[in-house]
Amino acid sequence: MLRSRYVVEIANTDTVFDAIAPESKAAVAGSRSSLSICKTGETILIQIESCDLASLRAATNSWLRLVMVATEIDAVVTEELNPKPYKCD
Image (cartoon, rainbow, N blue to C red; front, side, top):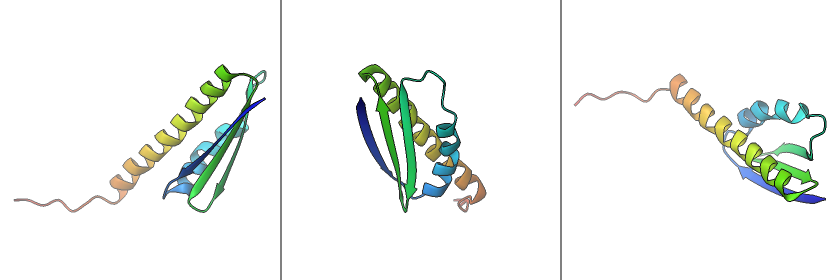
């Protein structure tokens, strides 16, 4: 069994974790990898176990991309809710 562990340090941990956690519960029957995800303070810990290298790489790409997209969307929403003052020259 292959294992990998990723520690993601971000400021908006609660929002990102709440966005991606439901995906971890939607396990696909017959999946070749399993996942554990938890949140502590300013970090999200992602642990992946897989039976082969290809599925480990695929799961890693999927989960890190999911975290990245959730972080980017949170930044866009935060900017929309708290726009910076517009200055005219």
